[in-house]
Length: 156
Image (tube, rainbow, N blue to C red; front, side, top):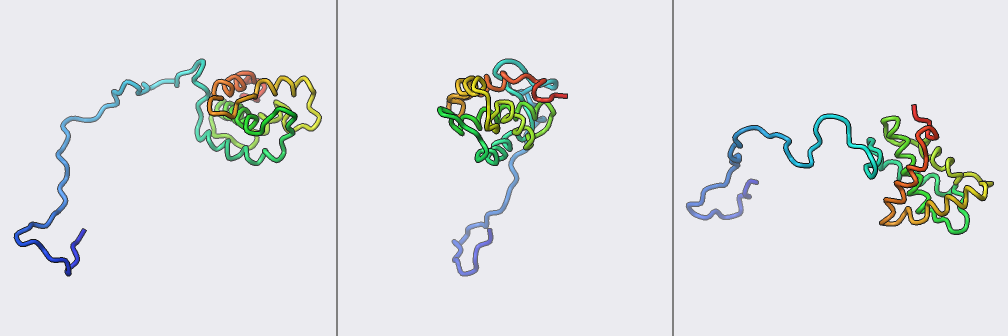
């Protein structure tokens, strides 16, 4: 940055200027231990379902919160966390980011938008979704996503 004319110079001091850093010899290679080699992404228990921009499902889920038909013992935070995971699974099966219809399918699968949901569905979902929205709810959310088969999600 240039020095303003009203600032005095130190006698005999040289002005600073840009110098580029020394060149690195050789090229760079991705040889870190955690680097994935070319090929399919890892799959199996605990890996989840990879897809682009999956966090967008959380934003879309806010639109459904006022329409949720919750019963005694159910929390909106748990329901949203579990159904967002199912929506992300559905979107990843299609190889795209989540959209509103993914969340619609997830909430409909568990009858959260239905006023007259059967009591056996309500009882099973209450136990399954309990604690899914907490900071330690990841295993619960994985179990919820695994409960819904790919055929029920309309996979191609």
